[in-house]
Image (cartoon, rainbow, N blue to C red; front, side, top):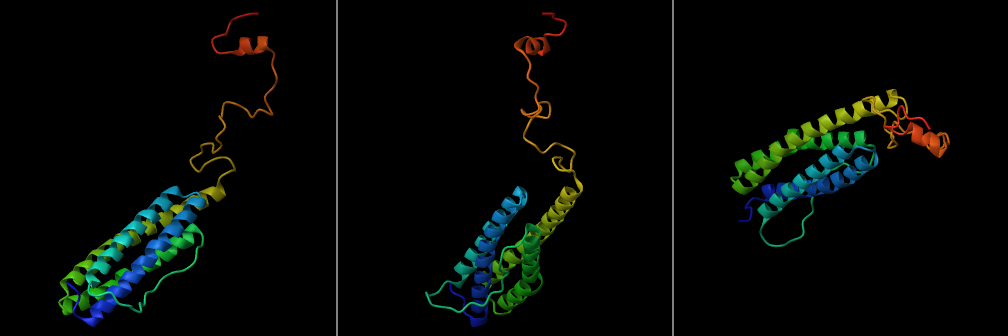
Length: 196
């Protein structure tokens, strides 16, 4: 059933626009996190991107009615920065939805007795609270990781492990000494005590 009240309809259109933009923005920011070496943060951006598309779909279904053009006003953060900067943009966007946008939209839908819109706004509001908290944890982890990387010698992870893919027990080929077959046999495992 289509919404009956113009104000609730406008809010659904605006929420649809905002959630659609967040969906796409988080995909781009996930790509940046991947490039900067934050695969878990990339996965978080992609997972929340999917959730934003679900919110947009819920709002779209509640608009219902006939197909018509609409001018949509929706706030959004634009551009791609570092992963830490992108996370701050995500946190700001989610907190805007939690503290300002969805409470107003929800109260309006409730006042105008638009039950479908009320449900859609409520579910989005509750999810956005979780998104903000997850992005904050991710930003804290990214900052800690960057700090640890700055304070750690090159080639060693913040946990003290070697970051090279080369085996720690095998020196690089350029520094390996050249040994004769007899010497390699003598030094082979299980050859201890053998004399040639």
